[in-house]
Length: 345
Image 1 (tube, rainbow, N blue to C red):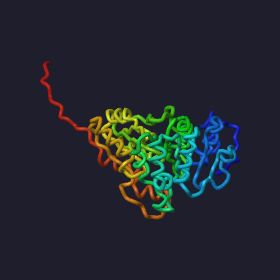
Image 2 (cartoon, rainbow, N blue to C red; image 1 turned 90 degrees about the vertical axis):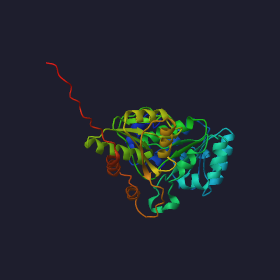
Image 3 (cartoon, helix red, strand yellow; image 1 turned 30 degrees about the horizontal axis):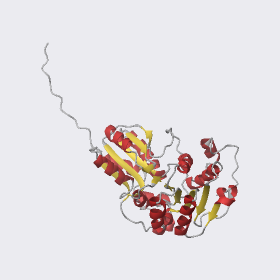
Image 4 (tube, one colour; image 1 turned 60 degrees about the horizontal axis):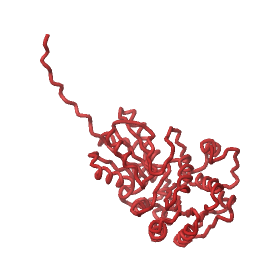
């Protein structure tokens, strides 16, 4: 992380070009630069974090009077954030997902969600991105916990560009938002996409056999990889980037169910309570009559040490693994006998 990244390209007006000039930045670092840039347009924006700055933060460099690194005190940080929000500020509260959501859960519930405070809780280390740090730094329950809280918007961007758009959108949104990011993964999706809009899923690829609904940086990348592998097997896959988990784009789920024979959710989260559960609930409530295959962590903690990639593979979160599972359960198109008609010569 460095506050000295200078570029003649304005991140706010040309994010694609800015990202091309900084290909080494992970989404969590892209977020920091985006927050610093957008704060120039709104003096109400304040940035709080719990011992993550470490010097050289772009927001601190640009707006030192609006940046507060409070140390390891997530609950206190959120208390302060909500107080500032009720005083008229738009507040970013930044921490690790395991601590900002789980350790400070009561503050998120009562001070953010219940009070509808204009606080943007932004957390790194979503899923098993913490890798070698182990289960204490993994966050596989955060989406389930926060999706159940009324008034809270829940978002996970798919790559650096979407992180820029999501940061702008959450700052413009009046109300509490949870923005979930990873750690050091660098993702740049070279694919056409519709304009970013909170609450509206983005169609990335059309298909009519399987509907892949994915959430977050890992989920979307894995879904796209699986779709390419399925295509080589003659299976057409539709890929939907469900960046906003709440409110869920139910119409996009309905349309995907109508166009495909199997729905598959892909997420770096427990299969209970996250995107998989949200899609299953929608299928039931709208009577869509589609099977849902949930890809993610199968309701277990991972005590193994290893790289992020190794942990993902251990949970079946690789494109090849997902494609193989889909081929094993995809309903085959029935072959009906064609009745011979009596022909009249």
